[in-house]
Amino acid sequence: MKNPLVSVICLCYNQARFVKESLDSVVNQSYKEIELIVVDDGSNDDSKAVIQEWLLAHDGVPFVNLQENLGNTSAFNQGLRLAQGKYVIDLAADDVLISNRVEKQIDFFEQQELNVGVIYSDAMYISEEGRRLQRHFANSRLKPYTGEVYEKVIDTYFIPPPTMMMKKEALDQMGGYDELLAYEDFDFWVRSARNWRYAYQSEVLTLIRKSDHSHSKGWYRKDDKQLYSTFKVCKKIQELNQKKSEGLALIRRVKFELRQSCFSGNHDEFDLFFELLQELTHVPTKYVLMCKLNRLRLDLSWVRNIYHTLFFR
Figure 1 (cartoon, one colour):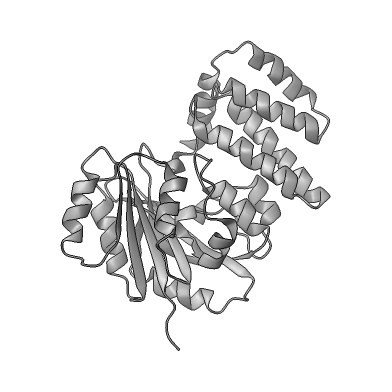
Figure 2 (cartoon, one colour):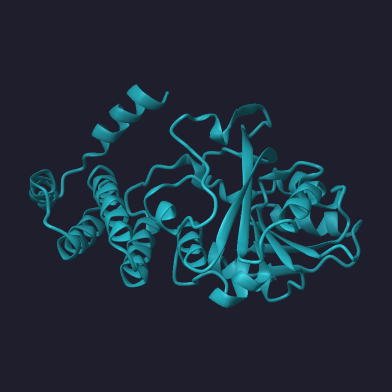
């Protein structure tokens, strides 16, 4: 039986320091039925030059050289339009594939039921210099889930996105990533998990780089466009939900985002989430008080910074 083709879409934006290592990790895979597609999302550092030099030694690799920064979702879809694989990997140009990742994931994926549309694995976080930090699921607060994970992805961020392998059929069914959003992960999980099952591999198959600009840093900043995108995804969830337990999961998510909005100085987004919470349930007193505090438009990011320093360092 012929091995299925895997499309790896490597998306680069100002990652000149790391993109060569990322690309090398694809072409050096033990599994050879790989279609690599490189997309540069309008980088203004030396990324384009590094990629073009690398391409001189790797004939036939498609390069989507965007002249302006479109953002992750739109740039990825540019590469997806070229993809011919049965499976797709979305690879950021600062992350690294373990040399047998694709081989192991294909072996695992091909054993799954047909209704499994996404698999993911454990990962190792590394510093900008490549020093290994810790495994994703070494954190006792995180637990991997499998099967029908729709309800879990609403209120729990547990999947390390760079580890995912997706059926292209699932991406095509969704029309790719939503280009109106500033980031893709949450929306993809919600929309795909509504129709497809997930499966988990416990092995470390990807190195995820933690840098000053990586999304894995986790905290919203003031005027962060991702927060408004999260609100838009929550509105989608409101329409997609079918069970009471899913509605309760959305309430938990909205309460979390309210706290994030309040203590990151994103006052307009707080108002949006508060209005949504009013639509979903009776608003608890502490969130009413938080709303009154938000109306003062104070910068309370220092409170969050103290909390983060005390409990996460």
